Image (tube, rainbow, N blue to C red; front, side, top):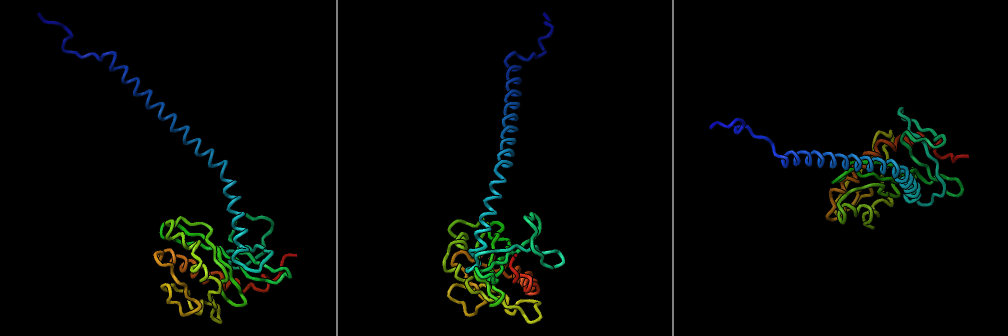
Amino acid sequence: MHMHGTGHHHPSAGEGGDEVSSWRMILTMGTIGLLAGLLIVVTYQLTLPIIEQNKAQYLQRAIFDVLPGASRKRAFIVEKDGRLRPEQGKEKHGYKVYAGYDREGRLVGIAIEAKGQGFQDVIQLIYGYDPEREVIVGMKVLESKETPGLGSKIETDPEFIANFKALEVKLKPDMSDLEHPLEMVKKGQKTAAWQIEAITGATISSRAITHILLKSSREILPLIRKNLDMLKQEAP
C-alpha cells in the first residue's frame, strides 16, 4: 500500500526552535558588540580631553627638565618657509619650539620636540639646546612603548641620560650641517663629545635616540641659529 508523503521530510518543532535560538543568539551577540563598540567610542571621547591635558602638562614640565636654569618659557611656531614667529595665544596647529629664560630674562636654551621609530613603536622625545655652547643639555622621553626593562632604560638609565648633559651639536660655519654628526658607540668607548654611549642590552633603542636627535638637530638647529636674535627677546 503506497503512502503519500512518506518520502518528504518535514522539519520538527525542535529544529525550527534551534534555528530561532541561533538567530536570537546572533542578534544578542551583535547587539552586545554594538553596545561595547559604542561604549569604547564614548569612553574615548570623554577621556581624550583628560589624556590631552595630561600630555600638555607633562610637556610643560619636560621643557624645564631639559633646560636647566630656565624659569620662564616662550613658544615659537616654525613656519613652513623656515621662519620662526612667536605663538599668538594657544595655537593648536603647527610645530613649536620653546625658548627658556632665566630669572633675569636671558635665553638659557631652546626645547625641541622630535620623534622617530624605535624598536617597537614611535619614540617621542624633547631635548634642550644651548645655542651659546652649541650643545644638547638635556633629553627626556615624552612617549615610548619600548620593551619594559630594556628599551625603557632610555627613560631611566642615569648613565644613558648623562650622555645629554653636554652633547656637542656644533654647526659648520655655513650652517649646512653638523661639524660632527652624532654617533652611537658601545658603552665605555666614548672618545668624543658628539658620541652617545649605548645602553648594554638596549642597542636598538639607543641607536633610535641617536638617529632621532641627529635628524632633528640637522633640520632645526640652523633655523634656530638664524633666528637667535628674535629668540633672545623674552615676551614683554
